[in-house]
Length: 246
Image (cartoon, rainbow, N blue to C red):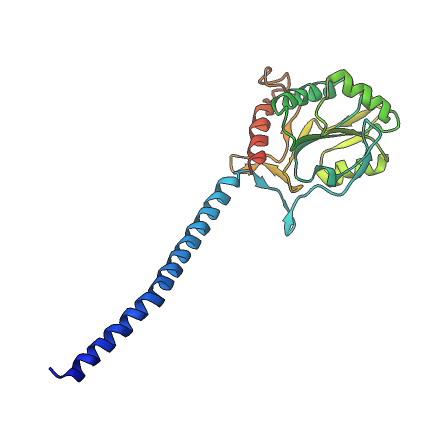
C-alpha cells in the first residue's frame, strides 16, 4: 500500500473523529431535550387530567352558565362583587333573616360545611337576602353572629331588591319572590349552587344528568326529610373538595 493511500485513510479517520467530537454530543443533547420535552408534555397532560374533576359545567346556549356580575353590601358594610370570589370555590344561597321555615335549616347546614372547610382560604359562601328592606348590614351582622359565621369569605349581602331578584331568578334560576300569602312573606328555593374558582356553576351527574343544584334543606343527620327529600349536603361537601383540588 502506498504512503499516499495511508495518508488518505488517516485524513478520513481524522475527519470522522472531528465530526464525532463536535456534532455527536449536540445530536445526543437535542434528542435528550426532545425526550425531556415529550416527557414533560406527557406529565403536564397527566397532571391536567388529574386536576380536572368529574363535575360538569352547565350548558348555557353556546357557552356554560357562569355567575353574573353583581355588587352588594355585606354584613360588615363592605361592597362585595363577584370579583371578590375569583379564585375561590363557593356555595350560593338566597335567604332572609326572618324566615320561619327553611332558612334556619339551610344556614345550619352551611355552618356544618364551614366547619368542614375551616382554614381553607379558597373556600367561601355567598348569601343573598331576598328581603333587603329589612335585612340591613347591621341585621345581617347580628344574624351571622347568631349562627356562628366565621369564614372571612362568607358574605351575607343586601342591596337593591330588583337586582337581587334578577340575580336569583334570571342569573341562577333559583326561585325567589315576595308573597304575602305565605308564612314569612317571601318564598324561595332551598337549593344551593356550587361555583368553581373561575365563576362557573358546576354539578355532579346523577343517572346521566347534572343535578345542577344541591338540596340545602335536609341535613346529613336527617338523611331524608318529612317531604321525602334525600340529603345532598354530603355530596356537596365531596364536590367542594373536588373543585378545591382542581
